[in-house]
Image 1 (tube, helix red, strand yellow):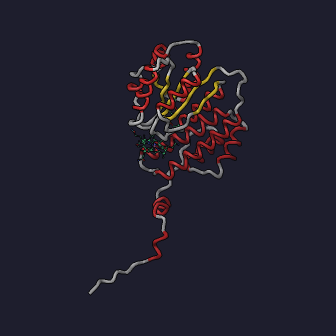
Image 2: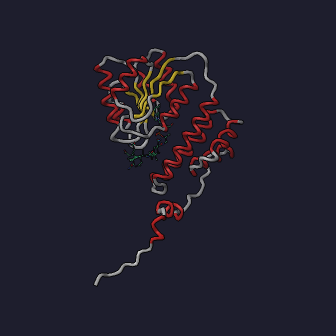
Image 3: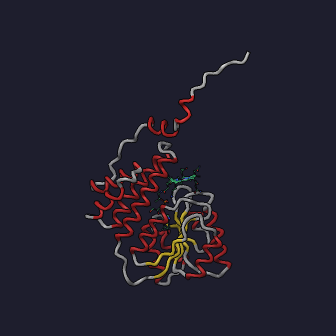
Length: 256
Ligand code: B12
């Protein structure tokens, strides 16, 4: 005799990801700024709240510079998200949501920045082939533009051949690369070799959190490890001054 199974069709519309999310412990809000307005921006990134970010960033911009709002607000919020992800408290949906909120915030700050009229030089920026971690690159773009550089933003997951083509076309004073994964940092090696073969001597500043090893980057031709986006204009200024990549690398390594 066939066994009859009781099937409850009411369950088919349940979004289990949301059930898990709703039942997860909400992390306590850490105090990461002495400025209450910046703290609200930080909380907004951590909570991934797309609805409130515009109003909060604009409020913060009434008293703080766009670069402060990025570095002391949005980035600090994203650092906390990184910690929550690393500890397994945040999952993909929350992390993606926070990334989007941070990007919205950076865009608002960029629109507020007073750009110097005289351009100091062209910088080509990209996120490594195979890599989607572009938040660092977006911060680098904003900081460089605020410091008077013309930024050619190639976006994320860019083929090394396309980066080479852009470098040959725009002849930048500096090239930057961002990566989040250990596997994709090898794209920087591939690109550094292609540049060297094409006899292009451009300082190539590679940054990235998580899996990108500074020793590896500093062992590659043309490459300089960038720890923090705020270093980008300092390095670009050295390049404009005519300092060669190996001397810039020596100088930057001595800082740590
Ligand atoms: C957000 C995030 C994501 C988002 C990215 C969204 C986006 N638009 O960027 C999403 C959800 C898409 C994602 C996906 C994945 N991720 Co992820 N992700 C992270 C997380 C939590 C935060 C990274 C981040 O944005 N930080 C904030 C930004 C501002 O920091 P940053 O990029 O490091 O940039 C700073 C510096 O590096 C530096 N910098 C960067 N570029 C430059 C350039 C210059 C010139 C200079 C001077 C400085 C500089 O300045 C910036 C700060 O000022 C990290 C955890 C961590 N601890 O880092 C994992 C992490 C990077 N991800 C990881 C992994 C494994 C993945 C996935 C493979 C997960 C999966 N199983 O699918 C995928 C891979 C997708 C892909 N192909 O790239 C691993 C990498 C491990 C490794 N050793 O390779 C990490 C470390 C998490 C972990 N501990 O396991 N991820």
